[in-house]
Length: 532
Image (cartoon, rainbow, N blue to C red; front, top):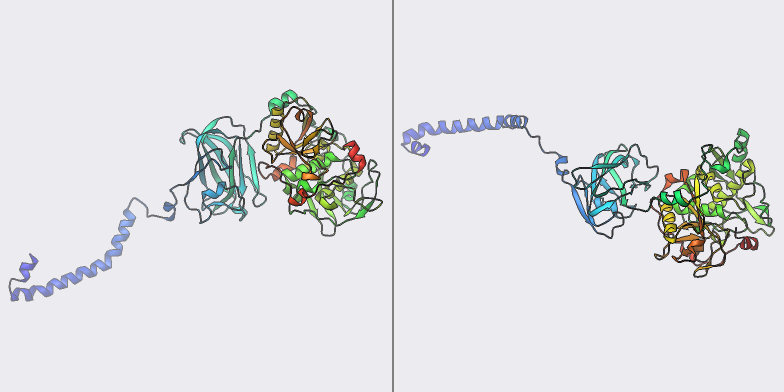
């Protein structure tokens, strides 16, 4: 139509063309001027909001997990609510068995779902804090289970949890007996950060309940309502201010030990607190004092709670050390000791040491115990002191029980040891007969305390470490036969304060190479005969 008008004649064309382009220009100018208003008006009237950053994060992120993964009970799929993890910190790093890597999400509330390829009863889980700022740690969470991923049952709830250290593991044993295919960890609050970081998540079914064995076969319970330290400390000396001052003064030395008559002097030695960087059972080697039960407890501390040892010992920087202990009423008391340790007339150190006769953290703890006894006089001669008497001096909890020898079958004995270790209990054992071949060159020693641990030998029930050290660091792998297990008795002790320093489920003890290369022990003839 416009073309026919424009081409009707020159006169008509001359008249309308200028007017046409004028109108076009006006319309164009109006369009440019009012376009923003139209756009703005459309945005305001639109019922759906504009896209934002979070819309790109709503899609869950999932990975397939093989049956070989040890953090989860089976093969399956692990998912997280948001796919916003920075590079190198996606959900796969949550279950890689490395505390040096982390899973991270830019949220303070979110969920993680484990979808196993089969239903499983989960009675244990753990979370490990990352290496970054504490504000990124999870603080409150809920663990739930489901068979269909629609209906969820709450299994465990935690609020206000604080990770005191980086790469610290908090583990929880549950009473859950229901089998679920799906397990959901819902973080309801972090420690105040704009992101959340978790190094490890472990969910498992573990051996943890031995109530049937305890109710039927145990004896020697040391719990009392009179003091958290146990029955041995009821009605004992009450700490005075003068006692505190004496114990805190480094120059105040303990008494000599009557049962270790060859040790006649205190001599100055150089202390290497942690030869391997962290406390290890290999740092505990008995020489001339008959306190094997105390040393077995020390080695158990190192096996289960190395960071606990580091926390209770303060290096004062002047060759003195302060040890955090508890008095008979369960109240904290500090004991400060010098680097002067018991030695024989020739100057040879006679108390517990690491390899090559080097004083370590164990030497410091033993001396602190000796000094404690000078004030409280519960076991004035620490020769022959019981394991249930030693542990509470450092943990503040003396609750324990025992299994006598030949009351548990081999499978029950293994259950008792494995469950106790999984629960973080200080587990000490002994033999009723001496000189019975166990494995290699190792033989039983009667009347002597050993530290119980997981074994590197899959065919063994468990391991027992002799505080004498020596070949294989004194580790005996207990066979599943009819000879050795019936000779073993157990004392199982509550970890008290030490439980706050758990690294998760224990692993088999692997002695350092420097220890494995040593086969000699240096134990006094008197102790070799007595077995203490």
